Image 1: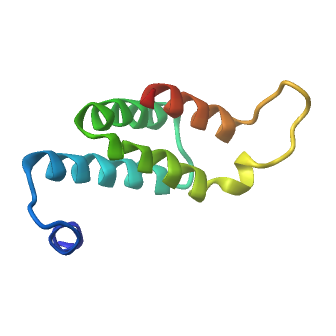
Image 2 (image 1 turned 180 degrees about the vertical axis):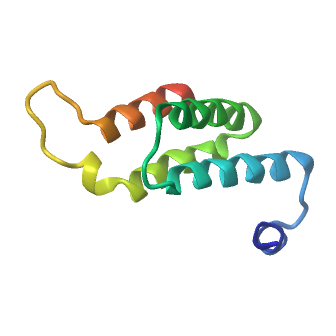
Image 3 (image 1 turned 120 degrees about the vertical axis):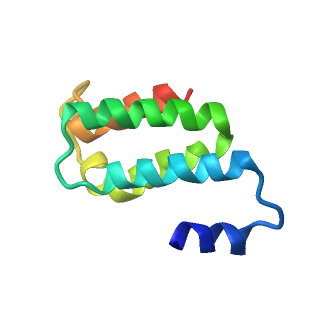
Length: 98
């Protein structure tokens, strides 16, 4: 219901690509908001990013939301040429977006 209200308020004419894009954005947000992400959830998130990018370029909001939700872990200092788990996941979904 919230997504329907958001689409109605933010757009003049809603086309099928918009509703499909909102569907992928909401699935991605649900997967990102889970506390402990398992490997299969990252794989599903990557597939969702690929499908969302093929639908519309607004899938870049998934990357921004992932960074905003996990910014503390992503910005942690690590040893030279080593990346932590959240940085690796952001790199994977960024490559899927590209």
